Image 1 (spheres, rainbow, N blue to C red):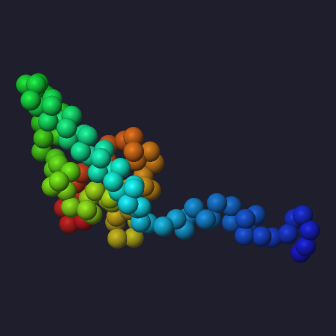
Image 2 (image 1 turned 90 degrees about the horizontal axis):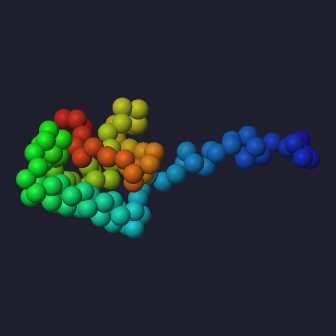
Image 3 (image 1 turned 120 degrees about the vertical axis):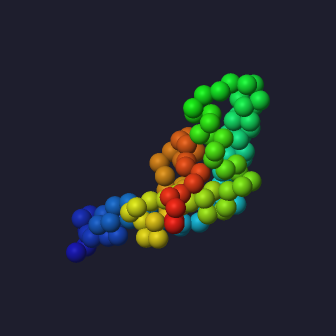
Length: 108
């Protein structure tokens, strides 16, 4: 009961505090996400202006720009396993380095 091997929240729960992470993004995180989306939009626009044509560029042109995206799509992503089928974008591993889908499936 007492001593070096007593039961505590840390020894029994491990990284339990991570599961209780808040779902909200800070204003700074949101600003950084918007900045990354705008930078990606600029790259697509410059490639489009250069006259290059390819299937990948056609798909990117069909996606909404940062200004056209609703806040729900900017800061959350579709997830089959989460309650409500949406999870905060910061729960995605390496979310700042991977392409996050700009649209969700119809109805979500």
